[in-house]
Length: 153
Image (cartoon, rainbow, N blue to C red; front, top):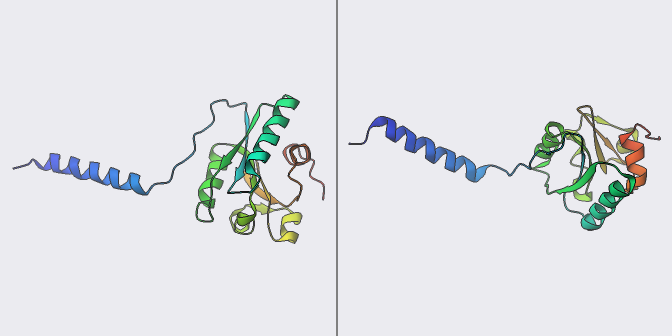
């Protein structure tokens, strides 16, 4: 006869294994609290080139920042926005396939995104997630305009 406490332990272990199978991978938090984190959200044809361009810009300008890539689907958008808030990511470049779907999940929309009906940039401004449509994903333009309050209408 198996003791009841052992049976409960086996059941709990089984439940943990089952839950693990259905959980999503959460990206790691940053190791440097001074480093600004940015990301490319979803799958873009030029994602690797954009990432290289942004990281080269940060290095050239002496900015302690990193542009990463975060896989996403429409289903995973809430999780990625939650990570943006909890891990203090500054901005996401939103790939085309997700630009309309993300609108309903944002705290605010700039007039550019509202007028275009999609957001290609999402900014975490002190915990308020705002969508913008800039059309120009160059780091020189976006970093200055969005991360330092120089957004021109």
